[in-house]
Image 1 (cartoon, rainbow, N blue to C red):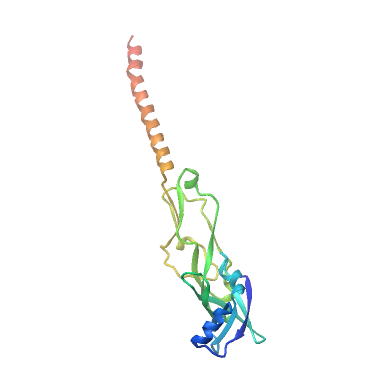
Image 2 (tube, rainbow, N blue to C red):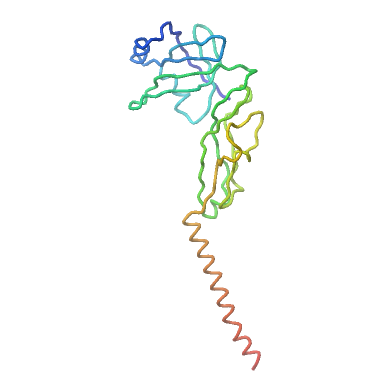
Length: 213
């Protein structure tokens, strides 16, 4: 999995006044836990751009006081009106301990149901999984080509490689449903079939009469 670097400064004070002063200076109060000690630090808000404002998943290298801490983002809080980042929580990675994080889902192929006029509904843009840091995938690739109208693709249908999904197997990731267009096409096909059957039935007596003559 790709990694981005966030450079931070250790926080000596974690009180409300100190936190407000950081935010006023466009710095984000942060904490990284999961290691031997919990580390409180601050980082420039712009350094989160490649981590938060992207559909991709990343691990993080936090650089504080000459030390580099591998981590993943666990939680982030935004201001309800301005969307400014208020706080970020990170979890320190250990190569021997599995970690839980969300990974984006990428759809490939064009389903048979969509070709027939159906509509595809994607329930999950990201899936939560558990894996050792070295086994964290960049994305989950799902091929929807075989899906017909009425078909669903479940979490349990997706092949896993050295990781485990944190969702039940019957959770629906993608479904192809009947659309108005597909419904009209199906109705038109049914009408055509009825007309053909009616025409065939109408021709039968005439054929019999000709035979009788």
